[in-house]
Length: 151
Image 1: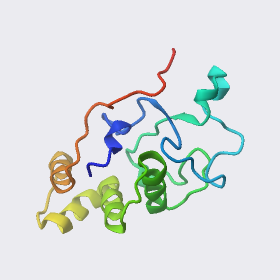
Image 2: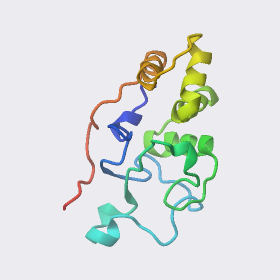
Image 3: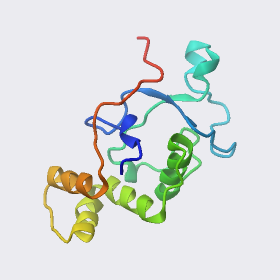
């Protein structure tokens, strides 16, 4: 999916290498934002760091519910849809959400891509190549780091 996910989610763990605002394009609703955690603001005391968090790795994300720093979202499909809206300003279609969730599932990647491509893949790198082909997705370096770790 050439939506822009790889701007924040890249590298070996598909994430965990930078700090970005939660709500880059659109602030999430109050029921999703963490009540007592304003992110990097507590460390830097800079207003622009309000709700800036370290990007969580997506490796094994299907096994790590609940999602977000508030731990209020238990469904990965809902979390993916929220990220599309808040981080990209995009309302993802049901098919786009389903494909992303299939990719994020370690077992589902092979099964999901077999379904989409009609090819049976037995290793993760080939699986990832198929996923990239289907969605025009590129995992490169993040395009821009919003807030860097000062340490």
